[in-house]
Each structure stands twice: as C-alpha cells, then as structure tokens.
Image 1 (cartoon, one colour):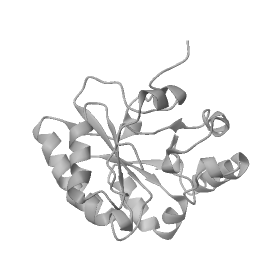
Image 2 (image 1 turned 45 degrees about the vertical axis):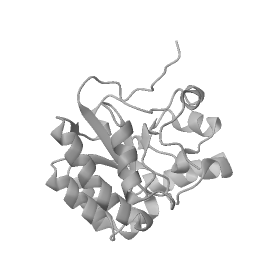
Image 3 (image 1 turned 180 degrees about the vertical axis):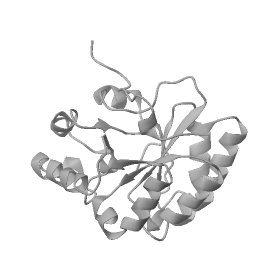
Image 4 (image 1 turned 90 degrees about the horizontal axis):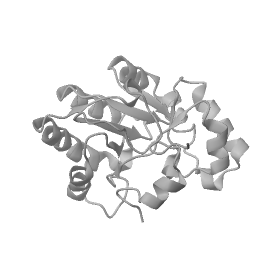
Length: 214
C-alpha cells in the first residue's frame, strides 16, 4: 500500500523535511529514484532533452559505480543529482550507524547536498545525523510506477491529477518501472508544458523545509 500524496499528519511528523517547494511560479520538480541503469535512464534523458526539461536524479551508489558513463551523461545534460544511499537501505530496518555509513559510501562516488531516503523511511535519529549535511527531500506526488497493481495509465493519471506549482514528483528509472515511466513521462511533460509550466532541478532553488520551528 502507498499514498499518492502525503497526509498532513505525516508532513507534521517530519516537519523539517522537504515535501514541496514554496513558489508561485509555474515550475514543477521531476525526480527519478534508483538509477542509473542502462535499460531505462538513457531513454529518460532523451525524453527530457526532447521536451527541454530538467530533473533531479536520486541515484544509488551501486548503480553509479556500475554505470559511470550514464551518470556522467546525467550531469553533462544539466540535471541535478541526489544521494539515495549506496544500496537502497530501509532506514526503519537499519541501524543508524550502518545507514549513515551507506550514505557516506554513496557520497564517495559523487557529491551532493540532497538526500532522499529509500521508501521514504527514515528515523528521527537518522534525520538528526544528516540534517547538517543534506536537505532531505521527500515528495508531493508518488505516481506509483513501482507498484505492480498500478497500470501505466493510472501512473500517468496520478501524476496529472495531483501536480501543481512547486510539486516534487517521484518517478523511478529502474527496470521494473520501464514500461510505465516511458509511457507516462512524455505525456506528463507535454500536458504541463502546454499549460505554461517548466521543469527544473531542485538544487537550482533555495530549498527550505515545508514547516520550520520558531
């Protein structure tokens, strides 16, 4: 089970994480998790180039290590990058020291101040250990391309229905999501571009938590 959009309760519990970007501009923030992989990521890069759009790729260290040329193409194409751990660890099931070490292992391969926890699962202890070095990015819209019961049409509809200015959208550049993301992505881009929106990288904006402490 997953939620397309985060609840207000969840956003309150994790109030110091970034769920969306506060802006009145017609800008949307596309993100891709779990790559880079040769079966999908180059196709995504081609689509983004076709629509003159930018995105942020939250990469697994192990995939960067296996596919350095694809990772270099992400960078040279002007897209942003974020740390997604080295081995796709679930923070709720991993000791904090091991979790941080895995993030550091990814950081040895490429430098970024953006981090997204796999599955969106991270403890308050882990947040405390990371917050000085990273902006921790979650999402506004989880389109569901990873879920076996979500069709490619439903994936697209989820993205279209819930996206607005400042939204952070999650797709995946992984083998299991290939059919859905390659179907949904160009249609999603075309729809919002026709409405006057642009797609930009997260690290081109000043990122602040949705709710801050006084």
